[in-house]
Amino acid sequence: MKKAILSTFLLLTSASFSFAADIVDTAVAAGSFKTLVSLVQKAGLVETLKGAGPFTVFAPTDEAFAKVPKATLDMLAANPDKLKTVLTYHVVGAKAMAADVKSGPVTTVSGQKAKLTAKGGKVMIDKANVVKADIGCDNGVIHVIDAVVLPKL
Image (tube, rainbow, N blue to C red):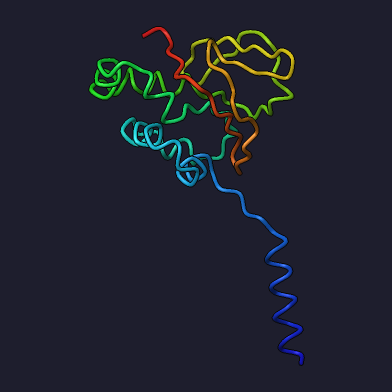
């Protein structure tokens, strides 16, 4: 009887806790960011995005990367510095939930400024729309976007 009560207690207490993952593990688990994760690995940014943060990542889906011309992707894949610049342009060095986003320029981890727009409950970075917001991670937040945003290279 005591064993059954203890087992039930352990089951209930473990079920009541949810463990968040870091930004990279969350992106991998989602399954819709294969291109992004591959490029993050190629650029050597995995450890950075697994770090303490906090980070806000505007994460293009595989469909968003499919809209980028193949020649542009090939150029980025062949040039690690430019690839790193593009990827870090999608990252802000602070945790910002969608409701906290204010319209205006924001400095990205790349050092360049991106334009954030918050209007009518919708959020954009440059010309990309946030299509799913506020995916919490233990080191920040992911906002899914429908396009790859490209900084000046």
